[in-house]
Image: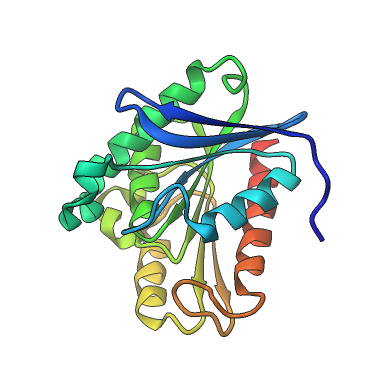
Amino acid sequence: MNLEIETETTHTEVGASHLPGILTIPKGAHGIVLFAHGSGSSRLSPRNQHVAQVLQEAGLATLLFDLLDEIEAEDRRNVFEIPLLAHRLVEATEWVLEQEETQGLRLGFFGASTGAAAALVAETQLKGKVAAVVSRGGRPDMAERILGLVSAPTLLIVGGRDEAVIQMNQRAFELLQCEKQLRIVDGATHLFPEPGALEQVAKLASQWFSQHLK
């Protein structure tokens, strides 16, 4: 059941690259989660929007934004260009820290697919400014060389039937030296389309962020 909460939603341009974003701030928010979407997705991803709504109900602000501009998105290679995606997430974080309504909030990253690798790389570049990271069906293996440098508590969520990605996440989990968990959602495939699967993802993410962003 969705709770009735008082929120303020702004469609805005994020960071030095002026990328389109959706900033939603519930009344009394105690943290903010920036979403790094996966390959071929955008700020309008219905999966990320669903998770964002659950986080808002838990008292967390959310920022969904495009990691690439329209021209960049036309080149499929850019969705796998992790340094570029991480740079855009760093830009967005710096923007959040400058906004009057969000600058005092603790920060979290929610990354999906290649966006999870970007979130982990960006976390190491922001030097302690990020309080928690969650990966949904992520590709943390694409950030393998920096995993030992991640300091924020990190939750990896993978579908139980997403066998190749499970192996990638298990390898990444071994390399992470921070507080960490690996959670498998039984019966779920890569995009968690099965009944109740995405709800489990949202619940796990909400619990992780609520624990670490308060």
